[in-house]
Image 1 (cartoon, rainbow, N blue to C red):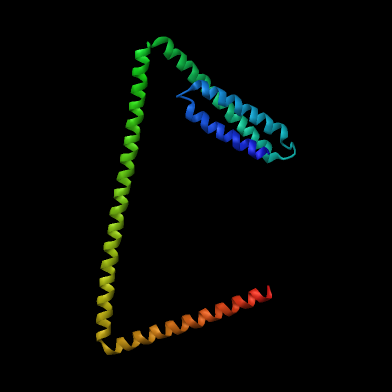
Image 2: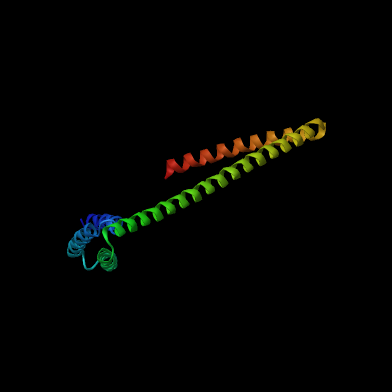
Length: 182
C-alpha cells in the first residue's frame, strides 16, 4: 500500500511540474493532494525500515522544494497580473509561446542533424564493408589460382569444420550430463 501511495505521489509530482506555469491554482491543488498521500504513506510506514523512511523523507524534501517553487511562481504570477494589462499579459504569453516554439524547432533541428550524421556513418560502414569484401574476394581468387596454397586453405577449412563439430558435440554432451546430474 505504501508503494502505491508513493507511486501516486510521483504521478502527482509530474502533473504538478506540467501544470505549474500554465495553471498555478491547479498546481496548488495537486501539491495538497500529494501532501495528503505522503502523510498517509508516512503513517503506514514501518519505523524500523530505514530504507522506506529515507524514501519518504526524500519525497517530503521534494515536496518542500516544490512548495517553494510554487510560492515563487505565484508571486511572479501575481506581480505580472498587477503590473501588466490584459493585452500586455497576452503579448507576454505569446512571447513565451514563441520562445518555446523556437526551442522545439532547435531541438528538432539538432535531432535531424544527428540522424543525418548517423545515416552518413551507416553509408560509410556499408562502403567499407563492400571494399573489404572485394579485397577478400581478390585475395581468395589469387590464393585459389596457386595450387599449393589452394590445398592448404581447403585442408584448413576442413579441419576447422571438423574441429567445430567435435567441439559442439563435446559441449552438448557435457551440458546434457550437467542437466541430468544437477
